[in-house]
Image (cartoon, rainbow, N blue to C red; front, side, top):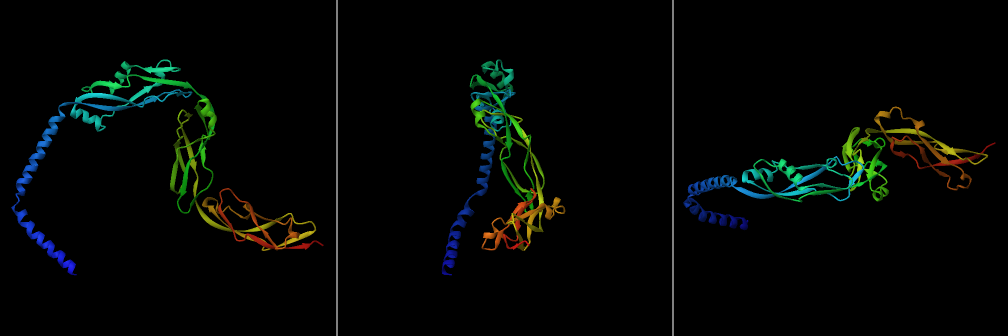
Length: 334
């Protein structure tokens, strides 16, 4: 309590000392000064934007129409660095991305695609100028030319695997196999690379809280020096709502010793499973098989036989049995 009172007294003391200072301070004059200082900054900025400056930009380069049976032996330049001059207000458009420059090189249009393909300096300058505003001066650019080396590829058909994780919403489950169409694609690559590949994969895809049948177009995961045809596939992910169902399944005994009959206790097992709503009514005992094997029952001193599920539909999930073993008696046949 004493600490709280001391703090209050300290606060009141500081407040009494500061208040006269603040009351004497000419805040109106300060705000007026700051306002005109701000206006001066605005006018200076506008004036400086009318002056000319030089800046360096990186213009991305992309390559199109590369034949399916060819590949870049050496990765071509992905960017051309250019130095330009213009008014500050115009250069601001480039730096803020409002004027986006981009070079697209069509490989088949360049002579002799079987060997080194050369985009010379004059051609590059013409392409760059088309990306700039009319008032902008191009001072220099690097590289001065683009050389593209193409190599012949071999072709091989490979299966496509879905790469990802499916997490259905509560009460929903994956009700079948994930289907990829087409299941195989043509893969173009060099001999060594092609020999090492056994399959190709889609880009990693994560499905969260899936609650319906999903069909998506997915790209194939890129591999350096490898080209796919087609480059996208259709992926079908069957997700259905599931519910629980319990059935009473009779036990089938296999390999009863000759001259004996077997009595099982109990003769049936309760089976509980998750089943899609679409086949809930059609699912019956005949779709399952539960068996015991009595081949060595004469030597069995425990009087128990393990039960095992030997048949179930593919779309059924999370099967549990009420018993994992049963009692039995062998009786001689008269």
